[in-house]
Image (tube, rainbow over all chains, first blue to last red):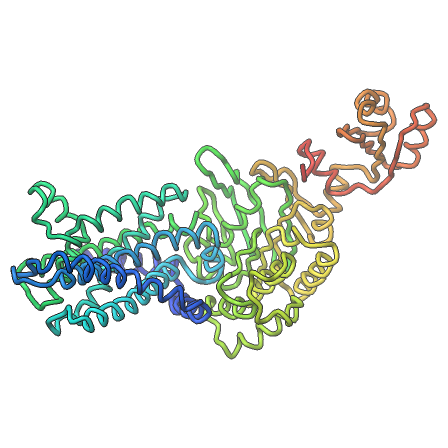
Amino acid sequence: MSVSTRVAAPRAVRGWLAANSSGNVGAVIERGFAVIRNQNWVIMVSGFFEPVFYLLSMGIGLGGLIGTVAGPGGRPISYAAFIAPALLASSAMNGALYDSTWNVFFKLRFAKLYQGMLATSLGPLDVAAGEIFMALFRGFLYAVGFTGVIAVLGLATSWWALAMIPVALLIALGFAALGMAVTSYFTTFQQMDWINIVLLPMFLFSSTLFPISVFPEAVQWFVMAMPLWHGVELMRQLSVGHFEASTAVHLGYFLVMSVLGVAFTTRRLRSLFLR
Amino acid sequence: MPVIEARELTKTYGELRAVDAISFEVSPGESFGLLGPNGAGKSTTMRMIGGTSLRSSGRLLVNGLDPEVNGPEVRASLGVVPQQDNLDNELRTRDNLIMYGRYFGLPYRYLRPRADELLEFAQLTEKAGEKVDNLSGGMKRRLTIARALVNEPRILLLDEPTTGLDPQARHILWDRLFRLKEQGVTLIVTTHFMDEAEQLCDRLVVMDHGRIVAEGSPADLIRRFSTREVLEVRFGSDRNAALVDRLRAFADRIEPLPDRVLLYTDDGERALEAVRHAGLTPLTSLVRRSSLEDVFLRLTGRSLID
């Protein structure tokens, strides 16, 4: 590497930062908390109850008919303990995607909130980072709450279950970053519906409610390529403290997805916010 | 050094050339107008100045900086009043001002008194704790303008600032803008109201289909593109067109509109007398001074507000 390229790289980075950030992401986060303070707390709580209702109806209700199933490492666990970590992974995904797609789209196109923000010295990077932070904060609250429910119902059998909270944030980060990048391509609400068309089958078939072994092998490979399956399996392993080589693969999947997602969103920032 | 310098500034959306190679300069403390009908490219030009819309080609410097390269730094000295209010509906009136100031990185000890001052300025002190949704259209507009002043901008971009305001509110706003101008703030105003342009602008460019078709002070433009006075006559919608050829003799230039005929002349009363003398008696007549509306009609063949 020549001297000139070594000097040029950080200058390019500095130039990019000067164009897209004032370094004041804190103000976007402050606004997020100010809105939460003003908001009806029912809105906050409703997001928490969704996975709880699933757990109670399917885990306890349906679980009564099913009995025990094979958990991580083949050990039998109750059906409720089988789906609880999967519901945590799904709700982390849903929450993060909702915030980074529908919410961003609405604030961009209809509330025009970001136009207002971007007329100040904030740059698109500040707005994107602040909004992703707020999505993760909300995800954090829900993850803490739901992990508490799992613990109270006796569905977690290892202290490793506490690690489900940071992992929920990692899952949320991966989906939020990817979701925001994808939103930059959308111009109408009809296109936004495609997100739901992808999400619902992913939730239903990613071994969330039944083991992946019910599928033919070809379908299994397809499911295993999807991000949610890795999130579900990882959470399930954490809930009972059972680890194997696949644990690292699941974790690695989300680390890579987060890095790629953030890079993708960063590339699309100006297309998303500056038109 | 000009505060704004645009050379061949262009913005295209696919096939559409929203802004088509326009060049202009704005001096510090000047009050500069972009005048034109909807779709002329005024708002797009404003957004490019703020660096929130990326140009397709050309050069643009604001305070000597390119807003695409140094967006945050350029916007630190700008105040932006967009065409459509984009207040934060999830925050209350006073918090809208304070939070907006936070986006500029300003401290609370400055912002709290500043917010109260601006509420006073916008006559919204009683509404400080009100939800933004509950404000009237005029109040929202005033709050948007107050918000644009929170960082004490040196350049204020006003995109159709008084659209939707009642006459009294418009005059109050014009007065406030005059005061800012006295303090040395550069004003960039887009409008399709002629009286507003005449009231506010030292100099303006007339835009149509993305291009600048004329530039000058309001008085200068009227002198160049219109006569001193205008005689408006109405003969009833079916007869207006039929009489155009006969009326031509009484004016330097004539502009037939669907509901009336405009006769451009330096002496309107005398022209009216001559018209009457020729046996053409209009149903109604009006003699007035030429305005920018006439300039626009002359330059583009169209009215500003259809």
